[in-house]
Image 1 (cartoon, rainbow, N blue to C red):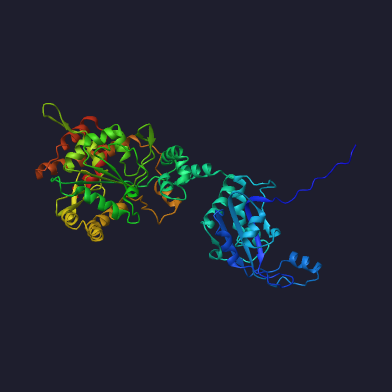
Image 2 (cartoon, rainbow, N blue to C red):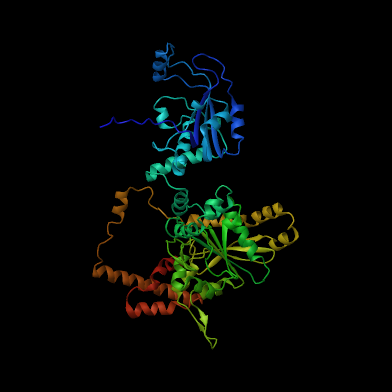
Length: 542
């Protein structure tokens, strides 16, 4: 048998990523190496260099290993000694390039140009090239935990000169490796960001650096955006529904709706990101992209019910404390994650809300009334309404929401001078002035919104009590009422209704629903759906 020949592996002569370390003076002899920032600028001026990053190190200390290696060469250094200034340069090219050419562009010896390998694989494939490029860039500041373990000097981020956002890309790559245990392709990365982290495809399309990534995969990215809204987008803890109405077709309902939305979210500059408009030709949620406000322009009760499919689904979607649920769109479903709904129409609020509650006139003109409980469900979902005219508007707040009366009643909180139509028609050329006046006009609306927000926040009337004390306070929860308890409760209710009914008769203000309620109590001898009104009527007779 012949002798086995061992093959030697030579350093690659070409690659896509290059790592260079070059001193300004020879660290052993002290000779001037004629290298500085101009060498780097000359190199990166070549169009073949797609990405670069470099830094000057002038505060590096010799390590124990460095000292031992230099000692063998007869040079004595300590770990307190500082190395001569030197440069770290990382370069990337789109296609394989010769080491000799990079060395020529930098005016350095070829042995100073290193091609970092991808786990022993050379030449580097595209995925591996991205990984090693970012790892080399990440080394520049010595901030990596591996470099800190060697007690290396940390350099500020602003010392790194690069033609890309190196910090974000390095940290993102590290995050991916930690999260997935592997590298992701560009396509996989953006799909994951859209699906789980809320990256919007339209932002990718607008960003020159991401446009190509979007156009290469736009169909899947748009589908994943819808799925994100259905599954991963955070739901608001509270949803606010407001109604703006005016007798005049040109009272400025749309102007007030938009001005209100802008003041609710002043940090959002782009209206397309702020609100989604339903109305006119657009009578569905196709195109909804997670905007915090939905504006319903010139909407009618029957349209609103049709959009949501039925009355029950509509009430669920407008619930003050919403839950995640699907809404139908063309060829699919999505979830509304808006915090605010702003409805505007010419219909008076009581007609609009009664229509949503199922009250209507039949073909003979006979009014078919809805039950009080149905009305309360609708009215109670609209904590604030705004009657508007050309020059002013009122802020009316739901009494039930503020615990000042019935949910079907509103009180005037403030009346505000606005001149919205005049401002927008006569000052259209002075956009900044218009914005300021709009903000001043809706400022009282924002104040009222904040009051309502506070009133609808989850309560804790026992914040000063421990869990054990609260459990003791409600120790009867889960126990059974005795027959005597039920008889007494019934007797108390009957007496209360008698007092309320008699007072209503005396005042001449008897509610139309009082007699049927009382009759039901006498007839059936048990609480019915109007039981929840008891607290309100107890207050009336005090």
